[in-house]
Image (cartoon, rainbow, N blue to C red; front, side, top):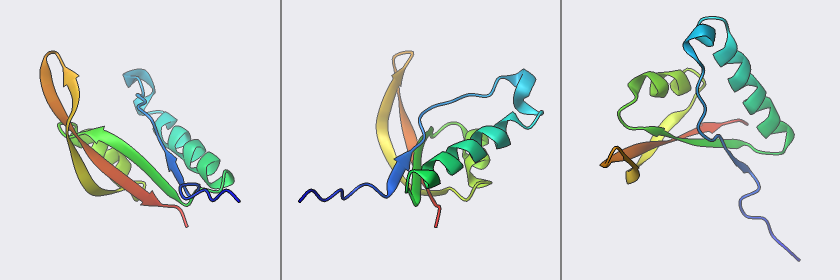
Length: 93
């Protein structure tokens, strides 16, 4: 018997809405589609990482019930500078 211990979780990878679409509802449509897809797949926990130095994106996710639950130090090397990520989780139940 195989037990899937992580089957309740889904992760959103990096994405970006271009400025031309930022005020046209694209953000809400994308997020809504990702949440629906995760739920349809059986996930009840949606996770993501967002740059520590990107408060706008953090607010974006917080509007969709994502909560900060941790920090990953030295998550990425950008222009020879180490950056950290914030780990955020939304409960889809």
